[in-house]
Length: 98
Image (cartoon, rainbow, N blue to C red; front, side):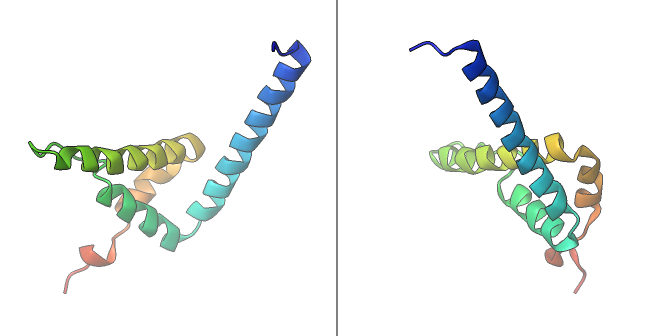
């Protein structure tokens, strides 16, 4: 069934409103240093910033993790690209000296 132009416009407006709400939520969360550390930890765990190739079937598993990580990274860069440098500069507990 074909959608009318009005239905298409309503769907487009609704999708934009939902995306804006997600971006607003993410920007609110990014005000918290604890959340930025949490996000950085998972971007690192998901191998977003390095290769996942292992030479065996483990690569498929790591690519699945990386896919989720790149989705999170993409949302960060869409909602608040100015936060990326701040996020990467923050030290994780494992980055702290003993």
